[in-house]
Amino acid sequence: MRPYAYKSTDFGATWTPVVAPDSPVRGYAHVIKEDLVNPNLLFLGTELGLWVSVDGGKQWAHYKGGDLPAVAVRDLAIHPRDHDLVIGTHGRGIWIVDDISPLRALTPGVLASPVAFLPDRPTAQRLQSGGGWANGDAMFVGANPPSDAVITYYQRRRHIFGDMKLEVYDASGKLVGTMPTSKRRGLNRATWSMRLAPPRVPPAASAAFGAAFGPRVLPGTYTIKLTKDTATFTTQLVLVPDPRGTHTQAERQASLDLALKIKGTLGDMTFAVERMNGVRQALEERAGRLPASDAVTKRLRAASAAVDALRKKIVATKEGGMITGEERLRENLTDLYSNIVFYDGGPAETQIERADAIARELTDVVRDFDAWATRELTGINAALRGKKLEPIQVITRQQWEAAGQ
Image (tube, rainbow, N blue to C red; front, side, top):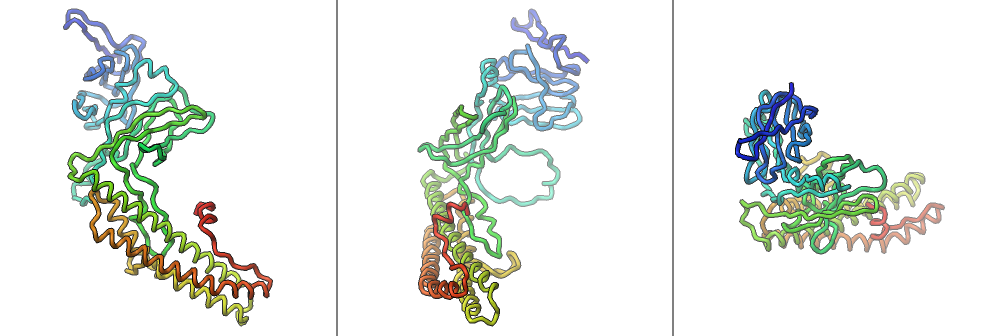
């Protein structure tokens, strides 16, 4: 089924075919639309799918994005504000191609480049809120646009040799994010959550779901850097607040500052628990290599219990998941952290005070552990040497960070 599609540049006096006889386009034509911005960008709907041309109809490509099948495309519309392509099909309902700005930028010069970033509309940081599960929710099968920032780039050839990575830098030049890359030729899209790395959280019997996400970065302009072996390419990414929001930049900054402060405290807490766990495990391991009736064994077991008592001040230890209701410093701090990072406004004064109070309580527990180690480990290690066993060392912060804990 050969399609017949024509264009006129003289208000209909003459017509020129835009689909050559040897074109790959298949299926008789239903609709053809010219882009609102780039007159060389054409969309052709046929009985066998959607076809796209970026050079005014000289060449055509079958559009397969989003798993759009080879279904009859009866009508097309381009949204003038959101730049979305709306596709009316016969058999698959309505499909929407989000933001065709990258297609508008696919000029012959871009296609000849080894790598090129393509423009995307500014990314709005949507208001963070929970939603209910209405009964009608299951009726919708179409995916919403991603809530993450989208970066579109073009590669003339598949990347084969050398490293390839995508990085995000803030206005000060600090690395704030990375993204997985696709090495295939043609158009590629990567997404960034617009969040910093999540905090380190000490292991415990309860889950800390709220701490699985990092703080969200502020609206502004960020630099995207694509590295292909030794070559680098950059572009700008613009993040804007949700237009529905009422919070100020100062409020967002205060929220980010507190989130980063809590993130630092959680890192200190994780290190403290790792120190205690390391000592406890070493004590139990040495005790397991001695007779149960040995006096040194009893001393090691007692020391392990003392360290565990300090650990229990920091983390929940009752098994049973989230239903035990046990809350320690870790649980209280991760709960506070999640309330901060999932709210777009500034923190309450009570939240700031609570973060400071938990940090002070953690300092007290760490001081007690350090005092115990200073007081007890020298004698314990002397007893271990007497039994020809290795002494116990408390891991340092440098060793812990070097190990990538």
